[in-house]
Length: 228
Image (cartoon, rainbow, N blue to C red; front, side, top):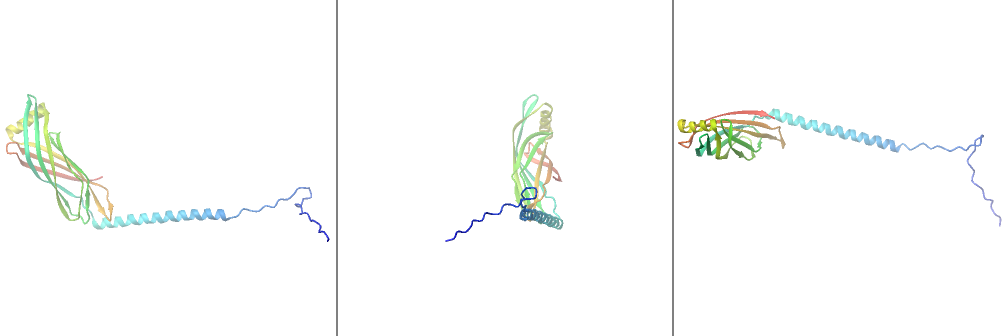
């Protein structure tokens, strides 16, 4: 039996100066191509979302221009006087008590619905707040009219010096006490499930009440619409 000679692996080739050469293998280009494709996908998605957002905005603008929405109409229709009492407390002060019911009318002439927020109204005498009333928020369909009521109760609010003297004189001599009702009504128009910027309607009414007859004898209102 003959034995085969064992052949040793060839050593790395040496240069004439005795140094060995190491072979260099360039890195694969798969990682650079994948990062470039990822950036391309991100750019495509950004352009797609930007296009869809501009398209939705254009559709909303076209619908708004076609519908031509109008500001809502909010009017104080009736004022019911349940009670009004004025009693001097000292020589320089007087107390006023008041119980009135106010009926407002909200008219929507638009082709879309209107969403109202909570509204607050203040009753004042010569710039002095006496009491406040609140109307909860509500939704009003298109082409409709709705009546809303609020009750304002004033329980012995004291007025001093000149204001008290004016109040006693107006009630006893003139049988006419003028009050001012002010408030802001916030409304938003809903189009295709989207809510428009708010429209604020300012209510400013002057009413006159007869303490003897316990009734309303005068009413005048002014309204103003303001986009916010």
